[in-house]
Length: 274
Image (tube, rainbow, N blue to C red; front, side, top):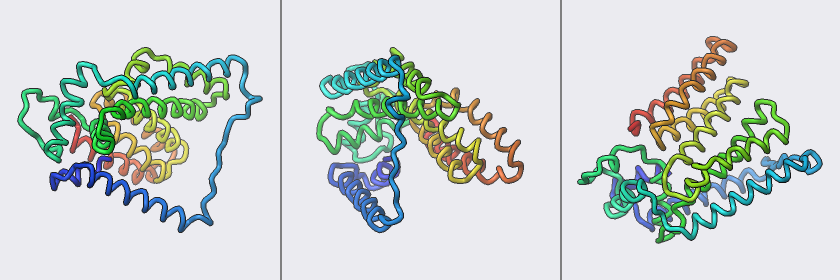
């Protein structure tokens, strides 16, 4: 999303045909990779057995599904109407679509120019591809769904049972502001999703210290920074925890992966720090 938006902006070419063409090429490349490596690819799905879930776990699961389904219906049928959406989230997107570029433009609403843009990049591509605002709310809704999955994985990493994981998902799903924002074009849930990804991969990196987990941690943190500036407040304590833990365990061997995280996140801060 970020690369295509920025690349097309150079040529003032953010429009339906170019975005659809780039995504078409991306899908074809992914299919070609799958076909070429089909003999070595193994798909596994590690599901919790139904017998491991208690009655209260099933009730919590039903509640989470109900909230997700309800907010999805609202996200599709209710047009964006929040103050922030009208004044800068959607307003900047329409300017970008008109100009074919995310370059600065004349406006007296300065946050249209300087606020971190990732969520709006994704919404603009939904708008360009669908031709309406029916799907723009789903950037936040998919972020909610991803966050629900992410917190269960984090709980599992911290030793939670399937019952504990279900409670983690239910607590996340019932956050009042989360329910409101899951069907809006604001960007708090999108930022939360990337923070959840950052914490999940950061915990994996803390345990393994490998470059693979470091790169995933850096990308998640960098994209969180691209989404909303307030992520710094929440990300810094986790970053310090992960970094000091890996340094304590691996000493000099931790320098390269930590440098990779710093470079990726630093590039996002330098380009779009807000």
